[in-house]
Length: 362
Image: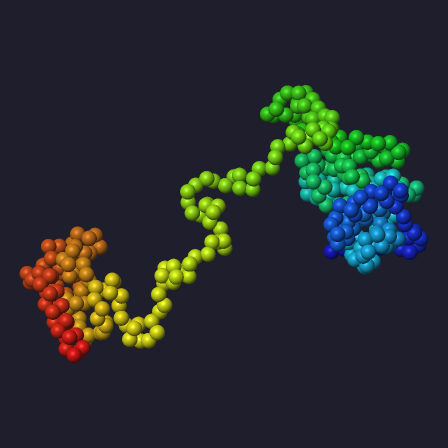
């Protein structure tokens, strides 16, 4: 990042003051900001000081700081940070900013800078002998389709050639105004070869100029003609879903009865191991405490999956039996290879297991 410093003391003016017109404008600008936020007007005030004097001097910085009750260093920070502020005297009639970003550079920006070097000064930020003109290279000026371009004060001059830039420089040197915008036969940023979709150029230009030059509407008529602002939820879809129900807000203004909340709330977890080992009767079907029985031998009926115990078809395709190492295959009809039914084996195993658990419980 380049270092930006104030101009030498030899060129600094002793004082600065806004003109009567600019002082009234500054008061109106400061009044736009709410109480306690008037310091936000520092950027437009510095810009107006530059437009009046051609550059931002130390005296102008201090004057703006006094108007906004700001420390001098705070206004100095703003003036040295933004490159839009010129910190040394520039041309009194024109300071030409040449865009040097890629679109302008590939379309002849270097030739425009050569014109500035030959007609104004071979270095940037230096004035010509009479002090009326100066120039600098800047970043994108925002009209890439009209490259190359320059900016003088607040106006841009686009679609330039070196010859046309020399004519513009001569006009500013003589104190004449130049029409800003494209300097070729082009309508704003329209295609250089002419319109491709809106072919009636005369009608388009007439409509655009008519809209631009239309008389201003009276304030009262504009207020009556302007429609009322739509409600804040005008675009909200009208559905019956709870998510879009405007009556459901959080937090709800309606308080639920505490007794109802306790009845609907999830029960508290068990406080001891005995209660934690009990099953919910509605889930298990009985309220007996669950205990683990003796380890069943591998391949027994109580170790089989529910599908095998019920005789349902299993396997990858759900059509054939699923077999394992050392385990008889289960037929889709519910019988193993020995001809015993899965239901009968299940009943036997279930009865044995129940008896074992009953003996342990006793």
